Length: 346
Image 1 (spheres, rainbow, N blue to C red):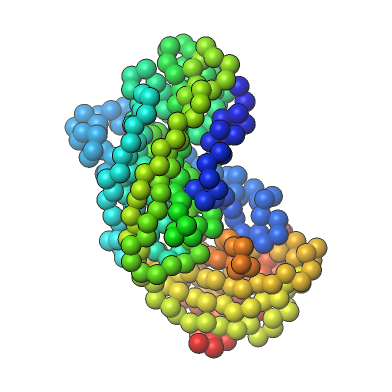
Image 2 (image 1 turned 135 degrees about the horizontal axis):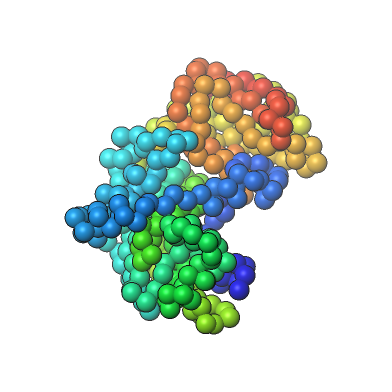
């Protein structure tokens, strides 16, 4: 069975549940290799350590302490979650179950630009949990095992059924522009999904959302997977407030070939600086040369997104942009196309 078969079954969710993760490219975002790499990123915990910790702490403590939202947020590229954001992490209680598996929402974080969620899966003894980004032909290391062979080979040898699991977050009030998933396997029967979504913005207060969990079973003696099992769990997210830092106008609106630059707005959220830049397409062919942008003095760790309204959005920036921020626009060779100064107007 090919990976596309399972992917097709998982992708029958409503589009509001699952967005696409992408490094910023206004008119060629589908071609970005960073998007593929980001979606496939995994870290697998050694089974000996996981087993010892499970015995000493129990399942609930294990899920909260080892694979909590704060720990899964951190990685070598962006470092630890800021304390201001960590203080806004909320415990969740929604749970569900299917044929041979259980799932529950662990923790959430939400501000006007970013939403984070962790969902834990646990399988019965006759099953093996695997990330939905894999398939029966994937190597054993994708679920933390060593040796030769595939997931399908191992399941056949052990007489077990593979469960490919995924979780996503959606809801009209959430206003997602894009999202990505990261998977953590602690054992053959335990899997945690880390969901990170980019929002168009909102207002401080509670936000109603739906957590969709999907599991596709595949028995090794069958040629095709069984029908996907889907559950929808209501989740209430508590949005942390951001601090508006200003609205800025470009000194040279036509400096970037193919686009007209509009207003730049900067906001400080608990996770860092949030940048929104209006960009109107003028020449599609010329605009294809634009890959990304950089704000002088600030390093952004969230993905850049061009939303349907024509805004470039960057999240989770750390640094100081000064009184008159300067944006550098880069092409696909990371060469400078233009440098544009912005002046504060509000």
